[in-house]
Amino acid sequence: EVCRSGMLHVRPSEEPHANEFDPNGSRILIVDLPLQPALEDRRIRRVLGRATVIRDGVVRSLADELLWELHHRDQASDLAIEGLVFALLASLVRATSAARASLGDAPITNRLDLAREFIDAHFARALPLAEIAAVAGLHPSSLARAFKRRYEVTPWQYQRRRQIDWVKAELVRGDRPISAIAHEAGFSDHSHLTRAFRVAEGVAAARGLPGQLPRLRRR
Image (cartoon, rainbow, N blue to C red; front, side):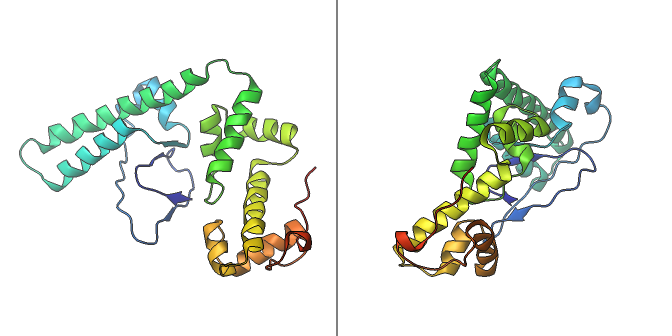
C-alpha cells in the first residue's frame, strides 16, 4: 500500500499490515495510543477499531503541530503533546462521522458506485479493501459481497482489469518503454505486468495496433 503525503492511516492494535512509501523518501509520524484512558470512550474505540485512511486538512494540520512539538521540546511540551493527541482523536471522530453522515441512508447501489469510482481514480496504486470500504461507508466484507453481486468481479479483479485496460491503451500508442508503462500502472516491474497481462488476455504484453490486441474479457 503506497503511503502518500497527507494520508493518515488508522490501524487497530496488532493488525498485520504492510506499507509502501514513495521511493523519493517519506517522513512519517506514528502515534501509538495506550489502552487507557482514551479507549474508554466508545467514539474513540469506534474510530480505532477498524482500518481507515483519512484525508482531512484539519487532521493533517494537527499532525504537523504534533510533529513540531516533538522536535521542539520545552517545559510545556508534555501538555501540548497530550492536548494535540486528543485534538487529533476528536478530529478523527469528526472526519469519520462526517463521511458516514454524507452517505446517510444512501442505497447500496450508490455506495457501490462510490467504490467503483474510487478504484477508477486510484487503480494505479495498492488499494486495500478496507480503504475502498471506508469510501463507500460499508464494512469490507459487505462491500466485497455486494460488489461481486453487482459487477460479477471482486474489487481487486475490477482494479486489475482497469490496470490492464490502461496498459493496453498505452501499448497501442507505442511510444514508451513497457517497463515505464508497467510502473505507472502500478506493477512492480515488466515481469509483473507480463504475468498479469497473460492471465487477463492470454498473451504477453506487447506493442501493437488496436486490432492486434485482444479486448479484455468482461462477464
